[in-house]
Image: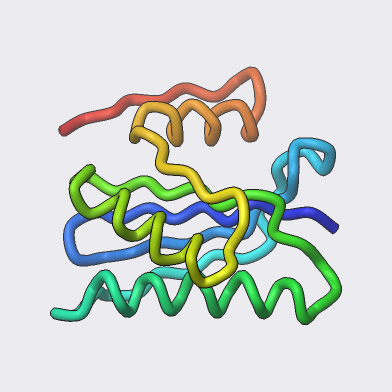
Length: 116
């Protein structure tokens, strides 16, 4: 089964979700959050790579990994790090893009309010 790994960072918390590809109607299969330490980028990169490999070891495939970080200067180095570790199809998305994708996966009756 193909899944998408979504990664969102807000403040000192990282949230990860394994979501079914669009063919499986965007069902959330697993999600978790953890507090980021002083080694935030290393810990987050290790978690993403570990999750990617664990999904592959289970006989499934991470078709895409999408990163949503508030600081673009941190997002691109993270993308490069996980790509260099063998994670394929990694891209950085804006918060609005991530929110729109979430709304589409919920259905036509979804509404979003983004507040900063």
